[in-house]
Length: 328
Image 1 (cartoon, rainbow, N blue to C red):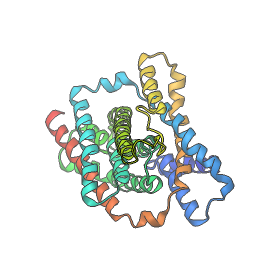
Image 2: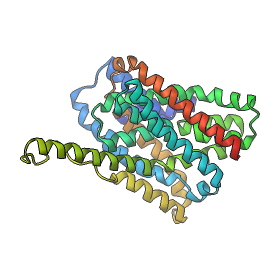
Image 3: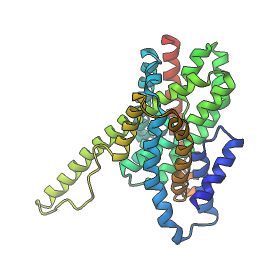
Image 4: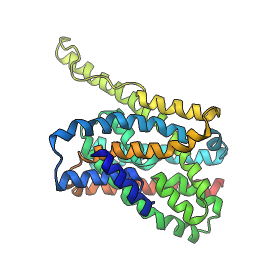
């Protein structure tokens, strides 16, 4: 089932390149689950692709990042990317708390908007162990599709109205737009494809440290919660309330190792050329499996999550635009 859905997603992507195969696949999974249902005999296989295959896809994503090219952007562009990403990630969760959005949903929206869309949402979901897992992922993916797609016509239009140069538009696109496919669509239409995608990959590099830091902080919260529980039970509890989240999930460490390996120049060009297509296939399969767990009725009631996504998009767009105006 995942193979068929992935093949169809790749075909649709050829005609609608602004939507990545992963986004198309997760939408297909959600539609199938909600319109026709998924038989129980398919669940073990879908669980496999949404977990195990996802980890391989995230690790291979690191081989797409040529670290020398990213560092070649210069400190000004890297500063814009780092500040805009970090500020959006932190502020979105604070605003989500004020709006009454669940912590899990706020975390995944913050991750998807600030880093790299569906891939980042899937990676954070896999490592964070959220209580409202599927619903949070559905809301975050909906935000990425909605606001990222809207950015495709709006970013070039605003760039023209603001009088941005080609270099400024490329940096702003890469630093502000959610999905790599959406960045590529804007870049191709505006003549800034290479620069915009390289800046975007600079944001993707931040996936590893942000996921690792979040996992570490959640690990500390987990220990404090269980410690308080032990104390209330007079020390009798042996911490059966769940496993501690790892400090650095193995697949995140593998992602970082792949980034470093690509940076050595030892990876043959034939492999680096083939990796993006393979990663797209694996990510689409994994997110199709994730999509089959989405309840569209709950997603339709998620008005606060959509509002939070709008705030997050506005924050990263405004912050990166200010940086471009001053530094580029």
